[in-house]
Every structure is written in structure tokens, then in C-alpha cells.
Amino acid sequence: MKQEPKIKVREVMTRDVRTIDSLASVREAMNQMKEYGFSSLIVDRRDADDEYGVIAITDISDQVVTKNLSFDRVNVYEIMRKPIISVHPNMDIRYAINLINRFKLSRAIVLDGDQNLLGIVTLRDMVLRYAVARESQNEQ
Image (tube, rainbow, N blue to C red; front, side, top):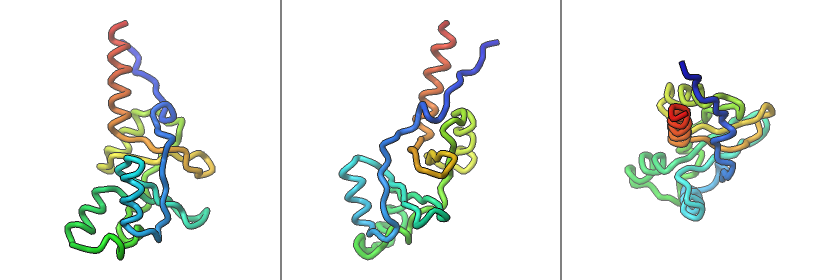
């Protein structure tokens, strides 16, 4: 019996994460998404006791575009999802995949033990990395 690939979240996560203040307008969020080529932004915590949030293109589509609201008059905090699921960088991606799937999400933020934002990991990236690792094991 072959052993399953051991891949940690830190090996798959994207460290280049963009954050935005919750008081920013949706237009500001869209401009950042366009500038950096991202489909989501992490919403900063207000203080150390707060939690991170996320705003994604789907939130803007569902809560602003379909309701014909103004991109300039709606603030990020009004449509963001908070709190967002977080994982530890040393977590095995099989468990991270299971956690994200359980909540029917597509991404999670990566936090260290002090709750500092280290990056973001997507279900897509983890599944593809796992599949490649498993295929290479089978070829050996």
C-alpha cells in the first residue's frame, strides 16, 4: 500500500495577498481586484481582537450588481463575509481540503499561531497539487 503524499498548506499557499479596509467602497475593492488580477480581497481586522473577512467578485455580483446598487455607496463591510475560515501553515492539505469542502467554500486564509495573515490557499490549488503528487508517487 502506497503512502499518501504529505503536503503542508505552506507549500501551496499564495503569499501575495491584498487586503482592504472594511470602510472602503466596493468600487475601491473592484479597482484593487482589477489592478492585481485577484477575484477576492482579505478584509483587514479592525484590531487584534477582530477577525479577518473576505470580499469576492461573487459577493459584489450577488449583493451589488443584481440589486442595482451603487459601487460608490456600498462599503465593503456591508457585503463581506466574516469571519473567514483559516488554516495553519503546517496543516496537511488533505485536512484543509476537507475543511473548506465542509463549508462549501473555495478558499481559506493562512494564519500563524499569533493570528498574523501569512497568505491564502484555494481549493483549486490544493487539489491540483495533491493530484500531481499522487500521480508522481504512482509512477515510482
